[in-house]
Length: 506
Image 1 (cartoon, rainbow, N blue to C red):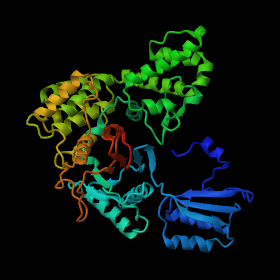
Image 2 (spheres, helix red, strand yellow; image 1 turned 135 degrees about the vertical axis):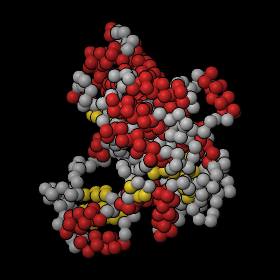
Image 3 (tube, rainbow, N blue to C red; image 1 turned 45 degrees about the vertical axis):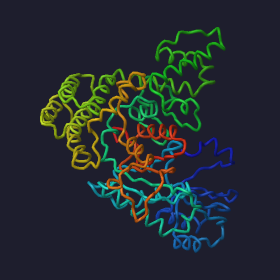
Image 4 (spheres, rainbow, N blue to C red; image 1 turned 180 degrees about the horizontal axis):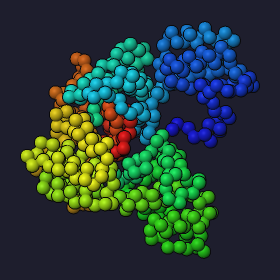
């Protein structure tokens, strides 16, 4: 996530070993750089290493704050005086995009309460982020969420305890940490996506910038696993927030540009299949544009899945469930898709989950009938049980905000005008709740009664530096919303983080 192996090699680092690997050779001609989290286990591994050192000198870097007692234990183990340096480099989190981070944690809460180990890990990750950005923030949290309040208190305790580390130069407007709970918006992670990064994660899964393509029909060996990183891939950086149609068009433009430079190699590029054939037929193109061949493969697989799973139709109904308030039409469309054999078990369950969340208290609620239809079409009990679980997790009783409130006349007019300009289409009507929350925050209108400050102090001015953290995970749709807010509000910088980055399967 931070460095490619080739970049590390350029720094003359030639050997990569795990500290817990038992059969490492003694290599006294080499110096060792150790980068690790300051956990009990890691400190113990390091103590054992220093008692029997395999390298000549050790430079030790911890990704978070290490206790004085652990430093003392390491010093006592270093009888041969091989340690040259011990430092804290605050990198105890995963930097996903320039404005997005994750802690790669799944299942952080047990019911409505924190798992104690996950609360500790989340506190560590969040305080490491603050230290790396040199921020000592004021803290606001979602009042309807006990886990949000608990995390806010834990972060505040660390800031108070480590006050010397957090003694940064004061800014005119203090930074703000806003802690939210995923349960306030369980809709966003359930929707199919149509912008590149979000779509890849939803349909293929992005794990530490890696995409597993091994199940793609007819995939070549060198493309079984690919890396998508905006830092090392210009095409991805320029296209990650564009919609699916634009990406196909941009790949086509790149290939046509190559063809213009090689006039003998003219070939029609009318479809994704044409593009794949072009890449396979021209090894020279593949060599010159490995990046593009990778994206042709990824886009080709996305295209195949969209057709195979009937996702255009599924997504249209999802958007209706998320954004409209016509119960009769929504119910009719969900039932129609439940009869369609192309709709997968996951997509069928997802549609019923969205219906259950939106129309939970509707007078004509037909959830029992939809659950019966799921059972009749052979949807597994595991998927059927998720419907009740998602309502328990993010239903009306739990939410602090109203996800489905009818829009006022001004908002409806704005949306209509936007539609006329072609800014929106039927697959991207939905805006995550986070967008509205942050919009209110940067305008100074976010209610203290719903998002109180921790402690007596409050911000007098509109915030300029905002870190928003979602317990239960953020999404790439929300990452896009934050990207757009940063772009359209030049005086504001927002960083989004979560315990994980969601897709429906997570």
